[in-house]
Length: 453
Image 1: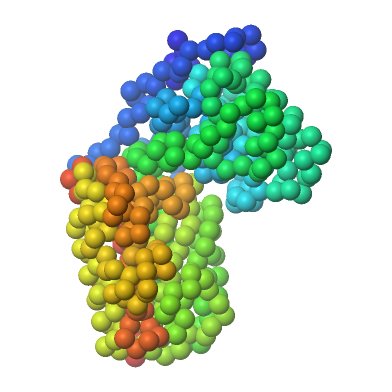
Image 2 (image 1 turned 90 degrees about the vertical axis):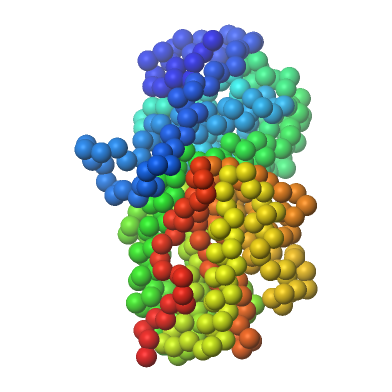
């Protein structure tokens, strides 16, 4: 029976290729205890090391990270009724194969990966990226790094035959690895690819839940990367605090944040929300060219990733001075946040956290759907929204158990009584063995006043 570590490097590539080509039945991969061990050390502080490599201390161990993620996927796949996972979601591809070609690929649906319960990961990439993986990704088999092209969201018509050829290639791998007669899990897909897979006799089912199960518990290396990503945003908020003054535009703050994040090593600035003045209520989830004015309340959200691991991190400021209404809104939002954090520990249900959030009607909305994501929690990892999701809309009747190793963001929002201002706070927490630790550290216990008069 093949062991997990057997595929590291290419020393026995030839024997593996012969097995793939000639075998109609394969044994399931063994998940080794060392690979599935998250290496949590809850007795130690969560690391936020420098980004350079050094020879005198261990920082992020990327080979261990790769092994852990792949073992988590294998474990989740083995627990499902699927024989293989075909992924087009870029977060699932990166989690499974540890390959990425940048933000460009996020919405193209052209890269894809395949993992069977009996084999090692395949990845089909855009043109020369496949050759790059063969040169620089020794944890993958060379012949498993392939060039591939499908429809580019319809730009290449299905009549070109790319979908049908890809479906035949995938079927041949499923046959070689002994899982052609079991359902194939797919996360997101272009309809012509779905039809092509069905045409060659492959039963397609949803795999996103399998992948979310795999991704929900973070290893020590993942938690370190999430903490490093949060530390970058700590610094950006210091820059924003110093730059906020009348006459600065919202989009200038967005430009400042993008520049600083990429200088610090971000691999994707997914979005920056910048909302000020009367735009704060209701929350529009965007930014404009509005000029910030004296006495404005302003809040920002920084969504970016470092080594693939994301932040979602709001902070609210008042510019120059703050009114009683603004301070009161902030105090209420902070109170809801602190009550939610106090309940986070292993074994608690998401309903027990969501219940401390105000009902929609209590802060000016007719129902929970219209208020969704204002009093909210969501898992963080290689994607912005992972398990668990915490809100009155989805958690009260369908609670989910909090577990050690989860990392998620908690968000609160409170409109001010002046009808224009609002407070928005977000904290990222790591669930430990006994409770949780907050990793978003820019001061937020009280309303920060930027450039106070």
